[in-house]
Length: 136
Image (cartoon, rainbow, N blue to C red):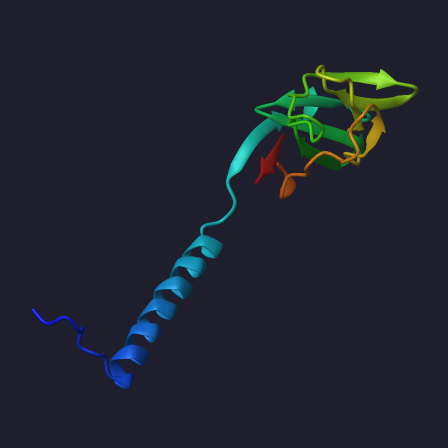
């Protein structure tokens, strides 16, 4: 065995670069084509207009007729889990029990408490028949 590795030719080098690029591109294409995964599903009748519910780690709001929103129950302040929907000064909010940050279920915006960041929104919320589906 020699102490010096055999140098590769320019052709071998570019062939390797082309193969690596093709592999990376096909992986990205497969990920993009995989589609979104439904992570939560609720019945439209379980969420009154102006209200919200918590299902499978998501706050699903119904701010107006035919309009739905969804936000993660992970509190952006200190990582607590939002576990309550309530009225706060006339606004329906999702409340984190850890430090009582409150978030508007229509927008995810902070209404009260120490959090400075809004809730993380789902990729999409859609209506399929009588169900509301959250994808991420």
